[in-house]
Image (cartoon, rainbow, N blue to C red):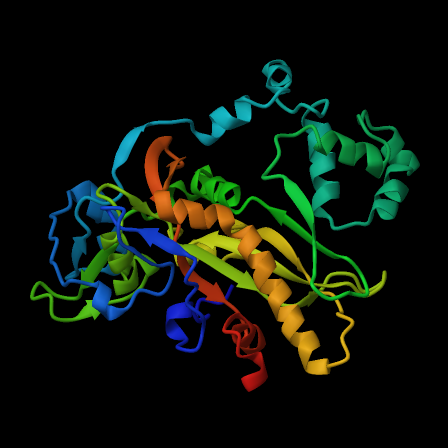
Length: 367
């Protein structure tokens, strides 16, 4: 995703979802999910002198002469938990990998062929054609069709499962409104626990000053912004702030079979450093949902677009419900090092183009 993409706090006309709440430490006063106004920040200076080990990496990246002021008492480790490999070993087929590291494949050569075919972007018909070649038939493979290959892939440890729900609409539609989605909190847990991001994850908001006088601030990461600092000040002591990044855009997902259109909803973590998160090869954005786009049967053309926008908001509310609960009461999650942290999941940014920004702000007809 482009690093210059706007966030919700940069758009004054984007919506502040009143039902997205973040609980105060006393659990009495509840603020909106996003954004936080300037009045929410009490100006308290919480200065903490980080150790050399904690600040050396960041100072090396920023350069000489910079001063770092982390948020005191944030990102506390409460206990040791399970690492990614432990989850991998909990798979029902883990016992087979004790004798065969490449299970469900026969060995290294078998796995390399399967990996090549899956990464080649070949259709299932082309894979069948390739596997039927006489020279390939001489290889000791455990699969001979694309269907057999996919069946073996299903035996590997899975990512968050896909679900679907038929959304009831107040007006008739030409086709059913089917929402395909994954648990948004499970997607965040998968990113937060992934070992690939172990050296690229930030757990504490901080301020960066260009000199010892602390006059000029430098903003290079989401955790260095005042928005992250204010969000952290609303959380209980020791909590870890996990900023959620969402992105969606209306996309044709089927051109040859009916021209199906949907809103793919991508989700990521603002804690992951931007240089890593924005690389497509890092896979830091997960497909969270496919928002349905259906045609409503209504005599007024303008009402059709209103009903479509209403359907999008309804689906968005369903998909983000687990994150809204975690933003209120928190969720114990394991980081890549196996440390257990009390995580809260407020919305940090929503990357959209202008039409979808207007739809989110419920002002599409005012453009």
